[in-house]
Length: 162
Image (tube, rainbow, N blue to C red; front, side):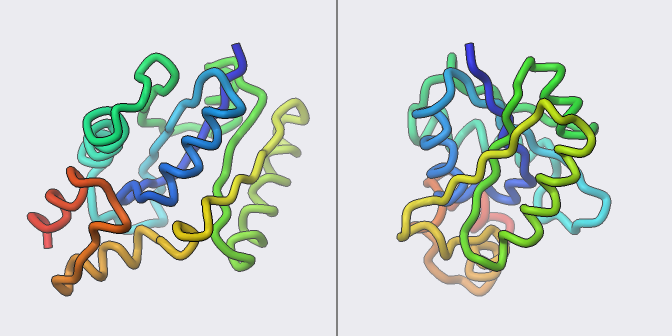
């Protein structure tokens, strides 16, 4: 069984993230969606809230296959997570050229830490490439319509938190 790890903050999960998850499921038997609390970021949602948002978006709203997706929190190196789940692939989403430099450096560091781990970059479809969690939160805070960017359960939670 081929397993991929898709790490990220998912604060909140968007249709761009979901697009990458769906594409990963076309390539891998199982995808581990791993969210973390990076000490260098300010989060809108706690780790518990993000886990709930991810689960509700994927399984309640979109009815994706629970047998092929596992949603977890982690606080270790992604390469250690790969070892734990016997995965040799980290999936990362790219939206724009501006994402590439950071992602390229991250992939290189992971490769230096474990030469058996590969990073696969996937792009979301064109209509989802401009979506960022940061912009979704900002639009929600200003009372804008975010229905085209996140699932129904996430819309509800974001509107309640704004």
